[in-house]
Length: 378
Image 1 (cartoon, rainbow, N blue to C red):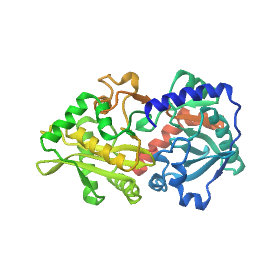
Image 2 (cartoon, rainbow, N blue to C red):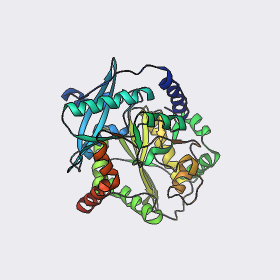
Image 3 (spheres, one colour):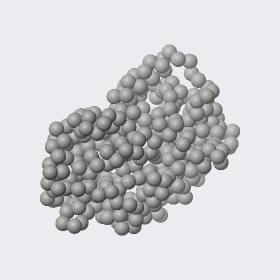
Image 4 (cartoon, one colour):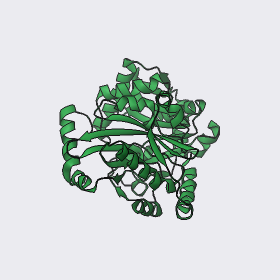
């Protein structure tokens, strides 16, 4: 779905919240058969699911401090399959994190769906004190008011693409190329004229190491995003590549990788998940050419939307002090629209325990886990 389609959909949903009767939902855990075919179900969700709800990502997170739950929300003939990351804490109980979910047909469905989640958790005596959500709904003053009316509390955002640049790639590639900025087009064409070539590499430890080194080079030079351990990325890339849901793209300079990218194809959505480059390169337009090659490959795989995965919020896109300023300028050379999603919100089931969580327990547990594992908490 394009950014413009998202905008139209959100406006429509805003109207529906005030006029349509609330549907009733039930919640349950998925069956063994549904888990076996998890990606088929998720990509059939009302909004096509998200790669962070995938079976691959479930395998990455399971056992890394999180317990993975496979949750199904149902209302009549409508079903929504959502990945839940669960973590248990002393005294407080369990936290549920519906990562990039719930995926629902309408904003009006959010409150009854969360009520169903709460009722189900209580019926199973799971002692869930709060449910963290981050549905891909475009932020607006009206939507934020509706979230508050549904009992949702704004929480700090977690995912890098809660503000992002989305490119509609449904048209033929020559039309997509014409639709991007002249700066990006000129960079792509110059790189092609000067003999720059993009290579798609197979998954292997050598490929992983090449991309990780480029990512580390970028982080060391610009410090724009935190970098997880090599083992985490290797496992992440393995899980997606093993399911034919990930591709690596590189260009070379002086015989060595100089720009690299890992792009995920999940259902109709492509996501530029990881990337890096060496500094002070001689080849002009090489990073634009890598993205263009990835876009065309994603089109071949049936994707209709390309998520550049992370920019400053729309209101800060030209703020040079923002840590994602450089990334934002690069990514918005392909699509001018920055999409701000609503980000993280908490649906509170146990107010006293939640008060302990926000007043310091979360900070303490995050610090302890990072010290123990060396990994990021979420």
